[in-house]
Every structure is written in structure tokens, then in C-alpha cells.
Image (cartoon, rainbow, N blue to C red; front, side, top):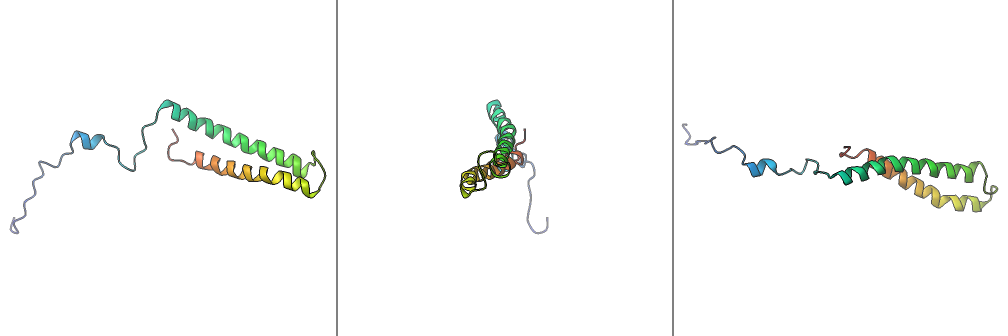
Length: 100
């Protein structure tokens, strides 16, 4: 080459240790118990969200456990916060990159 640069392409093949190491963007290798735990969460969390919503409906709108007093609202408020947290956890469990 006229500018004195010479590229040796014979040594550019990746070594076997380089090809087998996972990169930061590849999903980690999972065991069967991790997969079982993820699917248990994915199926149980929406069920728990539904049951929380059903209990809130009974407390707040169906008045099965009392009238329309302020205590009914106060009793259901922690349950509503728990239901929102479980719903958010459920969405994050289903939208993770490791679906399988």
C-alpha cells in the first residue's frame, strides 16, 4: 500500500473462549427452576390482581362489609395500594425480555 499501512486479516478470527462468553445483551442461561418460578409469577400475579379487585368491589361498591362510611374507604385503601403494586409487578413480569 502506498501509505505504509498493512492489515493482516489472518489473526482476526475469534478465539473459542471469546465466542462462548455471553455479551451484555444476551439473556443469561436459565435453569428449569428459574423458568418455573417466572411462569408461576406470570400466572399467579394476574389472579391475585383480579381477587384484589373483586374484594375492593365488595368493600366499596357492593357494600357487603358495611355502609358508605369513611371507615370503609380507609379499610380498602391499603388493599387498593397492594392491588396497584401487584398489577405493576404483573405487567413487568409479562413484559420482561426473558419470556421462555
